[in-house]
Figure (cartoon, rainbow, N blue to C red):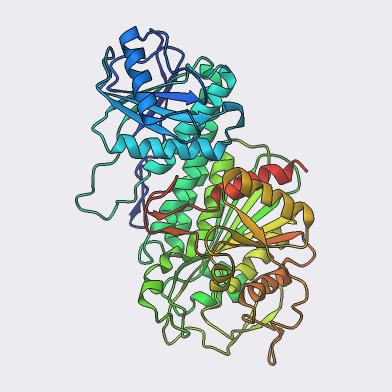
Length: 513
């Protein structure tokens, strides 16, 4: 019997600033061209219109499965499921059929959601060892691709954030054995998707961390320990260095907190091409400052205001883990927007690193203040080919688009189109909103510009566009997409890791143009 090759996702526990790095999954995934032995569950991936019969099944098994399929009206349509307990002639306790539709037409995101649904079904049982057969898929390469993508979906759904529970619920801990004819192809595809999953999990972990533990220095150190072992060059600017660089807009947001501003820079130089820059909002907790958030439900979720920065860290981790031949730099300005006698006041004026003076019309519009200096840093130090910033920036975006789409703002058709395609591939969808014909909405009476205006989403975007200058740029407003109240699709409850898959895919697409 050939040994199954094993790929496990997870990192060793390391203590950083009082917060231990998480081991993300307890499941294991193996691929082999040989059938698994001793499984308690058998899953069969079923293309539409294909007769469900494996080569080692007896006629008794085949007949019972055929009757069950007829009774359940199972056709192999994409996403269909059928469970048969104690199937005759088989040693397994349960037989699960998963419909694929036409395999050649099954997109990655649908295969992932099929995997997520499988994880839910399996986790509702006492299954420990799950064998998955791809034998009904005629094309071996398609079978390998689909197996890897479905397995990836299982992983994404099985993430748990339970570090603060004294007695956490048991995590999913099954062993999954995938039988595929093209074993090497499946293993290679899954390894790439595993690196992507690691990026998503890191972003979820960073976003989930409460404000008291995920403060700027802790966020930066967590990111460093995740990225440096992969060959990413990590630089962390201290509050003193932030001031030395002249980044008064970034520093000002945190000056009322005991946790002063930091700047995280993560550079994956996988090629000698001109860099692509990703800039993510890392406001580790947002009280709103003196424009205090007064809604208790809203302020309770403000640890997620660092989700844009977490997405940038996760995307860099994914690209480095996949060893992608791109030159990409992630810049995450980090702050904690708190209130004290030293905090900025409404009406104060800050000076950004490029010399722009900013009237703080609202202390609760702090994200654009820290991103301004983050964008400047990327331009000044890396001369990037393009800049994409990402942030949970405005409630106005949620009002306009809800949570089904992120809003994007750019005057660059190549960036818009490639980002839209990345959104379609990953199902982290984006929708362009206009930038033009909003002249004067951030004009200030006392400074060069002010940090608020109407309409709100456009005001934030136009503010950030000022600091991008003549560098091709896009702003991604992912407000409302950082957190899920309950598990759904590939996301567990809590932080979604939204933006990691979108950014990683976009960097690949845009770098090829």
